[in-house]
Image (cartoon, rainbow, N blue to C red; front, side):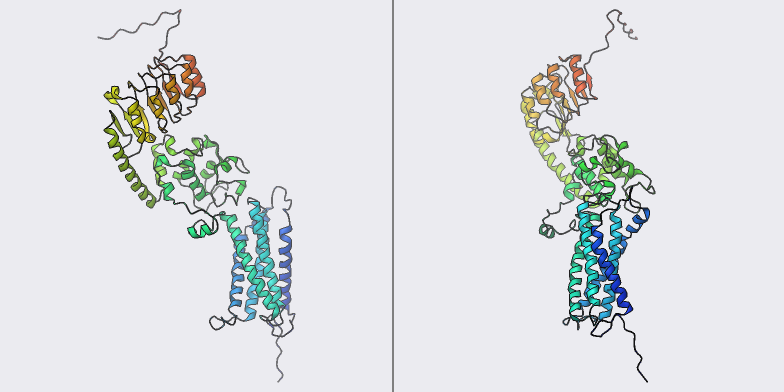
Amino acid sequence: MPATSTPPSMDSTSATPVITPARLSWLMVASLGLGSAMVVPLIDKIAWGEGPPELAQWLGRFHPLVLHFPIVLLLMALAFEAARLPGLRRLLPRPDGSTVTVILAWGAAGCTLALGCGWLLAQSGGYEQELLDRHLWTGAATALGANLALIFRLSSGTIGTGIFNGIANATLTLTCGVMTVAAHYGANLTHGETFLTEHAPDCVRELVGLQPRRDPNSIVTKPTEQRLLWDDVVRPILEERCGSCHNGSKLKGGLRLDSRAAMLKGGATGTAVEPGNPMASLLLTRLRLDVDDEQHMPPKGKPQATGEQLAALTFWIENGAPADKMAGDFEIPAKLRAALDSLLTPAQRKTLEAKTKATAEALETTLATLRSKLPGRLSCVVPGQPELEYVPGLNFAAVSDAQLTALAPVASSVVSLELQQTKVTDAGLAALAPFVKLRILQLQHTGLTDAGLAQVGKITSLEVINLYDTGVTDAGLQHLADLKHLRKIYLWQSKVTEAGAGKLRDAVPGIEVNLGLPDAPHPDEPATPSPPNKP
């Protein structure tokens, strides 16, 4: 009985390649992929008019889904081919050549499909162009290499053997290396350039030229008053909630939120933040929209901003969105203080409590030493908190320039200083320079003149000044024109005139200048007599 002939297939073992339908089909697929890989990176953006059509955008969204398929197949084909090496045959299962070829074929086709979807996704914009170009070119090189490796492999007379098979394996190895680079660029586009190195050990970061990681406890476990609003509060919130879509690599809507300058510059829809005006700030508007709204940020399905985070962002914006101000530079409402503390993890809160306790104990030791040298009372405004006030009480006659100098060790913590009726002089007020957080200063009934007021005008944190019964004049008052936080000043029985007070009101909007002048009657009208006292 004659033997039945078997139709030639892709795994033919003849010395000369047999062009079977299977081989011909895969050669056509590989050729198409090879051509696409060479042409796609050279195609500039198509003139879509107002933007890519909905269908193109929809197909582009399949890029993240499709690309993982060929990645796994190419690595699997490389691993299976490595298992066929003489040294590994006895240790690992030995797949036949046709199995590797089929895996490589589907991987090459997947690369072509991923390249097309990726190109469509890039047309929607919102990515950093240089990084996008790198990802596109390395992705195209991956597709080109995979299809080229498949063509070489199909050119062998016997699948898995011969010089063409060796060239195919070398090409596949190089392709997998390029694919790793393309994947790295893709991750940077999606998650930011620090995605791979953010949690890397310091030795790895040093190897790639990065600084060691900052200890988060050194930032977020600062006392509330000492936290920089931008660096320690706002930026971490934005990195957590918005960083994946609005970073230096991926600019959704043309907007970056990884720097204050970029936020103020804004994106395609305008400025993200209006300093001093939370209601007009697009960032807060988008964060507060209903989660089902298409304009809501972050998109539905991603972790959403908490009420505490929104409160912190609102506080920062309404106080002018400062770059270098601490929370303690402003009046912190009790609810906001609680919100800032709630942003800490339990471990961070424990670290903060221990640090605060140690700081309070050290401060109390310093205060005990100073109290023995100072008349009056030096104490914490809030027990346990590093904000101090000094009150001479009935010992005002014993306070002079020397006592003011003695406060130097705690000067940066003093927020309220009462020097009324003391013997402090104009020259002694030069010792106020280190009092950088001083908000309330009482100087009534002292020998203060314009020369001393020049020293007072250097304390930019001042909010309330009492100059009742002092020798200051209109000229000296101009030393306070740059104190933008100044809200109240008392000038009874001083030498300041209404004209001088008016100039200060013009220089410092919103200030309350109290000259202590009662409403006087018109010269042509008799004064209204005071009502008689009741018996």
